[in-house]
Amino acid sequence: MGIWKTAWCYYYGIGVEKMMINGGNGLKSEQSEYGKCAHCNEDNTQLAWCLSCDPDIATRTRSYEDVIEWIPFDRLLEIKKIGEGGFGSVYSAAWLDGIRKVETIKDGNNDIYKRARELSSIVALKTLAEFKSLMACKINHAKLAIYGITQNTETKEYLMVFQYVNNGSLYKYLRKNFCDLTWQAKLEILKNISDELHYVHNFAGYIHADFHSGNILQDQRSYIADLGLSRKTDEKVFEGDIYGASSSLHKQLIFIGLELL
Image 1 (cartoon, one colour):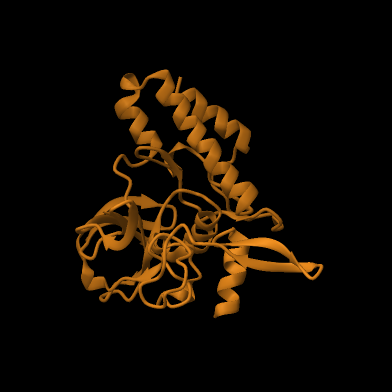
Image 2: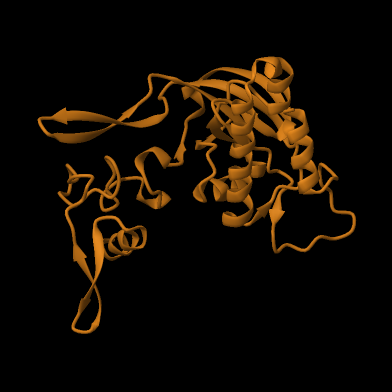
């Protein structure tokens, strides 16, 4: 575990630096900016997060807030259907345990980082059809948060638990709020969408294949969702394969831009 942690820290530039030892590459420890782990006294690798001894180490997550956890279904209450996606219904629920967060406590001139949770959180539920592609995008900087997996105790269906977005799809948001949006707000939406597409295509290596304003979620920022029809950029396309929006990506971007005019 120690070797894996050192390699992880070295790769992400946390707590170690490159140096030359006897003409070869080596590692030199630096004082961690995240403080010491309260359990093993090793340097934390992120805020309130230690890869050496954390019980969630198997997830290989980069931070405490990003852990994908198993969420017992009885910890999800007030489940309501809020929409229909390409691969099943979308539900909202109240998660009693709440979303993970890190709290900062002042101790003189020092900051102490403490693991905590929100006091109950509204989350969204959906089938696992797009879990793999969404996780690949999340790991590669896409902003839609994924919290964990649960299983409906009645239907036995597995569901992913992810970020609830207050305003729903961009399509519905524009129909309701278009007249109140400034040009700056519209340009910010387009920038968010462009950034998300960059992460999906160039970092995660996926083609959405069903990209339109109904598959963009809108809150304080925009999120690309509904990747159920997505495919890898190097995946072969065969005649008869099913895809969503038939227009090319640049045409869909133009259409979304026109919707914002």
